[in-house]
Image (cartoon, rainbow, N blue to C red; front, side, top):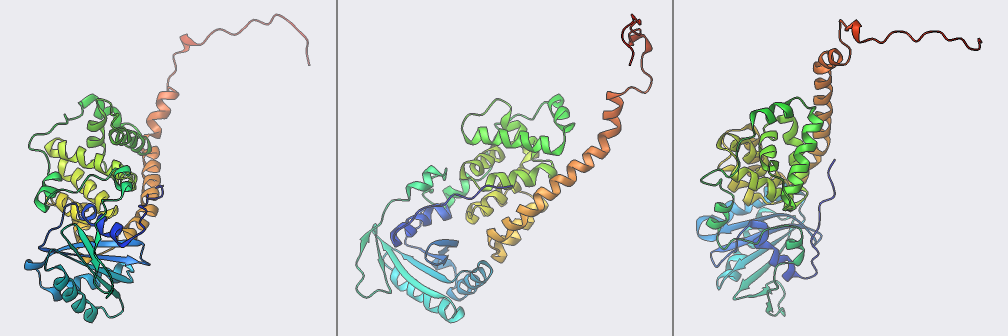
Length: 346
């Protein structure tokens, strides 16, 4: 149902640290400590940005422990920013080690464009590399300058830029099977992501995602591609006001499943009370790893679509039969029999 998720190639600790702004959505400064949960030095399972002045280290360590347990993380990288970064990283690392003794910890500091590994006595400062080029290739937007700017990027626009779908178009789409509606929504989203959209693509996505049978399939289709996820976000931001709660929930789900929980949280502020928004919010608060949810969706979404198609077939079969075979055919349209002109008999 879904394609393999693209990966980013990293070779040094600096490459990992350079990814943090893209993962949380904004640049961190001297008030922050970041925590990455990882498996085998390569797979990042979760990322958290902590404002040091506004959080208690013990509370942070407990939350990190829950996230590590649910995600299967085996090591933590604690990164302190600015002149006080080393002191804060070591302090949070020490508290976390007491709360989570089964995890290995590595403390690092970033200051004035350089980084250092704090748990290596002979480690020297190295220049911070730029973000991995793979991120731009995969369609990830550049990190915002601040958290406030990042959240503004994921707020709905003041004025909708997408007109509602015309009534006759909506009626025609509503007559199609769920699978056909999903196919149309996918193709429209793909064109928007490729910056080759047609006039009605955004309106079709905004309309079709309101349909529960379509929504799950579009979320699964979107989250494996940063470009498609961003396209879904842009449709939500510019959609007609009545369509925004459901679209916001779908966009937040795609962001969450792609590992961008901070961005998903920013969208959820505007997603209303739609049930899906509540489920994603609960998953983020509980530290449920996106991979676990995506595994469930990979099974349940295709099954749900098959069931919806079967129900649509049962409901529309009498109408389709009536159109194909009239109950009282017009006998005047039946041609006369061909006269027997003779020929061999068998």
